[in-house]
Length: 326
Image (cartoon, rainbow, N blue to C red):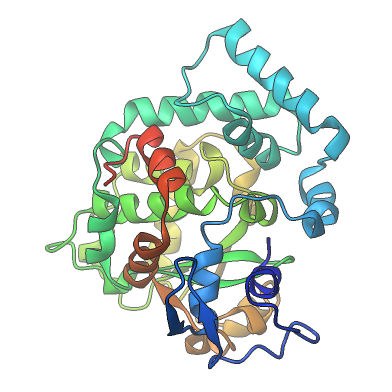
């Protein structure tokens, strides 16, 4: 369900052209308390929505080759592959969990199975990124990781990693990876984001050799896996801005050590040229910091709101993935 449909369904407000929403409506909480909500509050609450929006069927067909009539059959075929081949032991095999892998691989069960095997192997090799991690404790990362909740169909969710703000003496590289991974794991609980996918913006402004020394080949491989090689996300693009030649050279060095994958074609280096970025991402979808029109949301703010609005289903989802939950 889109934010706009959620707004109309829960508050009986007529919205014209999906652009007339104001931030001073008095809305009812599910428990009957009255408080002033901003539009952003509504967007945060929609982050926990688990229902497939019929309005997304067209995008699901275009982006994921998904046909409603074939969905159950594809899920069953993927589940059969898991049991027949025995190559992985996923944390879950329910329909909702398997569907995200199908959507990330054009609804082809064999491709979805290969992705699931890589995902499970990555989890087995890096349990410290999930197991017993206090997900709410990652608010300490502040605005090192940000998101834009605009989710336009041609861009999807925009996730921003501001590498230059990272202090390696305060936060380990593992903490940074945990934060990125958490934003992705929670994000793909939403059917909308399973379909639309997203773009990653790596802002290297302020990046120094002290930061670069943290990127070993092993860490680089972890990043590649999280970006989509071993994660069920529809990765639409990775955009690197404000980067030096040193960082770009390092990237190409690690690329030679990594598996061959279509993902590499989606990595774009823009240097300090924002016009180059605009050719691939409309400024309407970018934060004002980058010449856009949107308001970014920090990881800390996002997790605080998720904690406020979460329910038992969310807690169960997090536990099934290995996270510590209330």
